[in-house]
Length: 319
Image (tube, rainbow, N blue to C red; front, side):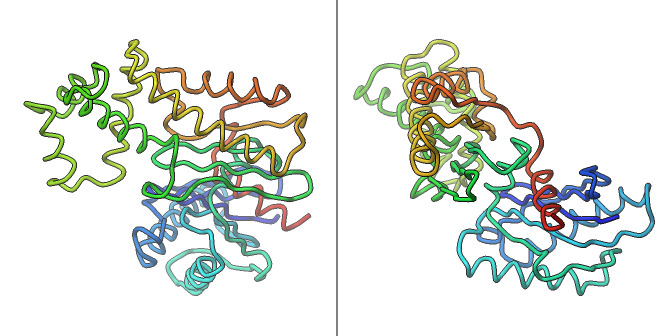
């Protein structure tokens, strides 16, 4: 029996699964963030190690001996060759560690490190051909065709990119509220909504919250549901923000299709991330827009989680 580890690591949590060669998940564990670009390599090592440990603890209910023959890591913040070399060093530390109750029998060719977009695609669809449109705190669109060609659009972070993300929706909402307060733009219920949610005496107090309290990307992104709720309640300004976000993601998805798929390709587009779960029917808006352009596309929600996708990719090493 061959056992593999599939790991999905992002800006908020790390998920690890242990799978056998029949695609059965024997153990699953979670730990903290593992984007080394934002938290550092030592903290990333601790998160991945903790996630593996939790997975093995669960697996011990079934078997006492776990020999790992492949490991696949899909991690946020991994895009360049230099990043991969950093994580390779981390994996070597894991293999040499006395902390993990694992027998490592992994050839170098069976250690694969990539960006988390690929594992989200494979987990979401169940195989490695299609497109993933990930829109949570940040955003990225990634596709792979039958020839193995890939195309990435976006994923450039909250300053340089992340169009269609919760962060950008939240910022656009606050900007709209302040413009309405100034009298520069249409009036909107977002002024009252932000005041109530943040317990502000005046919308001007956003300055205190955002700048002086030093709110980070995740805290700001968590305000996106305020815009979503206002849009669902019929606020025109909020609906325009949601429509703009949808069209940015449609544009990114169209770019991937044009780059590596034919116009009439029958393919699945899986949508992952928090923005798709809102009340403003962002998913339905996206689906209608992309199908209008590419009638053979099917838009779906994830079938499996990204860590499961990482496990499937690890098992491919034995084909």
